[in-house]
Image (tube, rainbow, N blue to C red; front, side, top):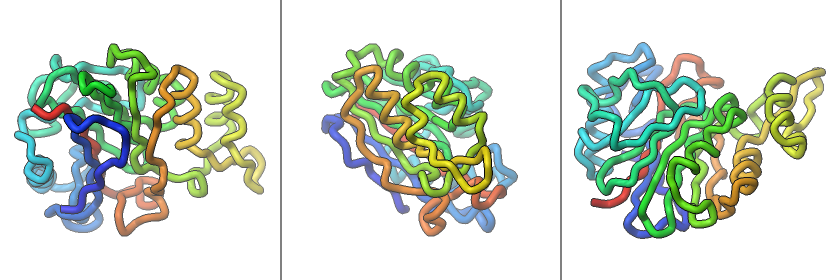
Length: 252
């Protein structure tokens, strides 16, 4: 199985990874490691993919904690999210999971939205957030950092693969949502030839918003899900497609 391991300043007791599209059993157009139950993929294949992923991570299936992502800002504590049977089958709505308990795995699913992983420098807390433009503009990162209950300067973050700054075209409503929060966000929107259209740099915006609350050690941001079909699913590139997942946990 092809996993990407973050290169970041997290302590040795913190483990993290994100899947690529390779190493599973799903057939086209979900080939092959599709982890999205919300897709029309065969549910048996998705369940098998999640079990293969848990084995590759070296964690028990029941220790992974998912929520039903809704492009919002709700954050849940892994300790209050029940083990899922089958994996991923939950009705708890949210877009981030944090944990203070060794062994509980925080997980989010993506296919162009940004997965952000967080860890306390002392290894006492971890978190995973799903940040599309709605969640990012609404404050999902700020709420995740708050839920970690660690001083922001003692938190490190990693920005996982998302749609990149040369591929993410958005309208004026997206730009306005970010600029209303911070006028400096305007610098991360490049006007296109079509009036009212912009290229949006989600990586730069995420860094800006994290810096504003004191999280300055932020890594990642070198991938583009849209332009790297050999590695990643992309909903904008292929509306019928699979999902990757990002994981972070404190080693038990």
